[in-house]
Image 1 (cartoon, rainbow, N blue to C red):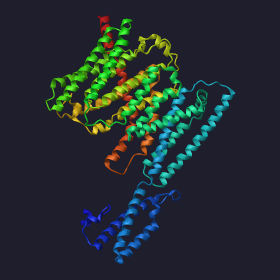
Image 2 (image 1 turned 30 degrees about the horizontal axis):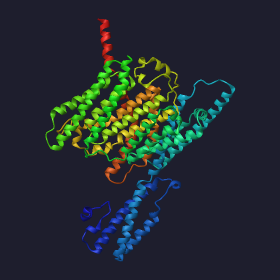
Image 3 (image 1 turned 90 degrees about the vertical axis):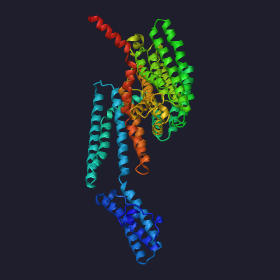
Image 4 (image 1 turned 120 degrees about the vertical axis):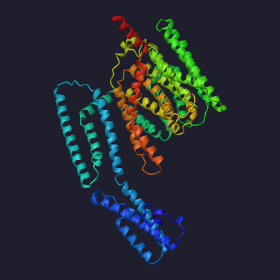
Length: 620
């Protein structure tokens, strides 16, 4: 509007309703606006038509060059005849067509590019499957006449594949060159070709893989597994926008033991606990995101529930191991210390919350206590023994201890439910190993501490199986759940000072940001430690699991790729792009938290200090 008033050439659509002018001036303004937009449209159309291949060209049918000339000539006649009302109507129609045409030609190559990127994603998935398949194929082949014929046929197939992709390579380069497209279009066209060439360059690998699949399981079972994992991955992708979609894979996980042969190997308590905790996790995806509403009673309830769990574990497991001389008193003392710290944390958050509500100054003594509890929580797990269940309980207790100091509502209950669920998962994976005369309490992250169990584990063939695909799917579901289970993205945007009341009350942006990030990281570490335990028990190679996780994240990436927006508000555009970027960075993030989980589960300060003392004593 200001450009029009100053007699400048304006780019957008003029709103004449806000201007007090005569019908003639209004008609001329709208006509001038329509001619400018039509000129922009005509220039954009001419640029596309200059280099496009006629056989592949798809014009904007509502406003072709012929219709463009007709409408321009007709509006000129209306202007000469001073038919201003008709001129306004036709000028507005020209503006609408021009804007639609500009959008059409601006996004002219969007659909082909989306198809090419999708083919690249699918090709990358097939390449990962090829790598996994090659690791499972026996490298030693029998030298016989039959094998020679097969090898010759495979070489012929390999040559045909090379010729086919060479032709596609030449055609794709010609298409980009002839149409004078930007340099990056070479990458868009060549990337899927290279991916699929590598994926299909070993037809013998695929033939042997499908042969093994037919021998190991039925086609119906394989199709159902592919369908379930693909559908679950798409649901996880949609959960970035709709949190309630997390309930779909969680419900599938809860029903999984009852729809497979797994049920026969599990006890009744775990058959009740597993679907119950999965259902409870589903409920959190329907709850409002954690924001400014404060319900300290829920936080205290979460802490009390976990205190009861620790007390039960102390009585039934640790004391029993101590009586059998299989565990020392140090483990019992450390567990009691963690219980005391958790009680102090609950008192701290309750007292500080009451002080904040009453408007009285927050106690600096309690803030100092909170920092001390937080520091001790990160050190205590490293002092515990490497016995699997002892170390996991210590890590989860420490994470919860720090987590509830920053909690204000139901996120504490979410953390407790998540830890219950991943513990059930570990127990289920242990039972599926079918180990005789071995209890899960005898397992340890230290390989030398349970020789009998290690002997049993060595009999397990560690090649990739459908069980590893299930474990990887469970893991990525937990990762997405840990991120969006309580609406952490929204929570960070709607920050409330009461989150950090137990630690700071003044504005310290770096300290506050660090505390919030550590709180967000806590559920991830609990899940990563659970995966570390599952990987240790099943001897599943971490690299393979990361590849499978990458496959699932690529499926999610394809779904989120089509949700990326280039129109709308900055918030909508930025959110759609950030969701796609987060999915692509999931694998790198998983590698990072897996290393932290390995540190929390494998490192023992007591053992390190003991070894240093022995070494020093030896050389003295």
